[in-house]
Length: 69
Image (cartoon, one colour):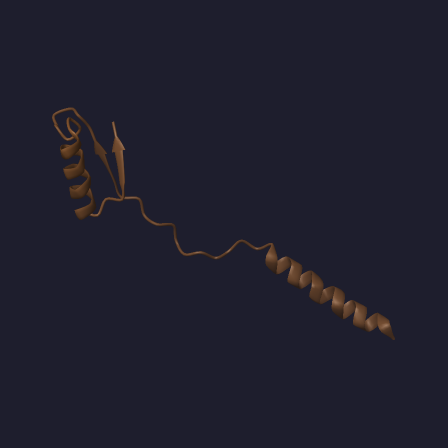
């Protein structure tokens, strides 16, 4: 008589174990909006104040990544 309970338990245990192996369903990855910051034809990298201003401007414009080249 214990065998039907064992099959039910085994089935439920396997289903539960399978659910934990599935990857999490997260939302889409955040978009990367980047800008290249260079010292060619620009004085953005010549002083700390210029760097602060450039980073602040990038933030205001919605960039979330700065690539210094």
